Length: 70
Image (tube, rainbow, N blue to C red):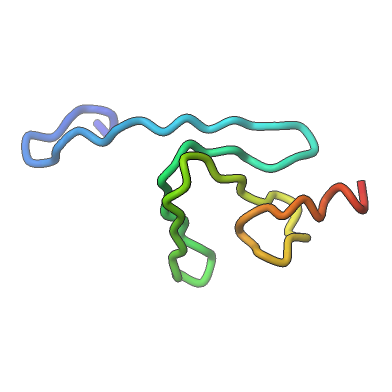
């Protein structure tokens, strides 16, 4: 089963993810994000905002560009 602990893997700490209507997804960090092309980007901040509208100049990180066209 996917949710059963493995004897060989250490437990992974849970990350809190906050969904917001008309806004970014907030993730408690540090975090590593795998993009569609397979590349990864990471942030060691205590909380990151992931862009859901793809208007950010810093994608996948949100820079609040969605507010200008909402």
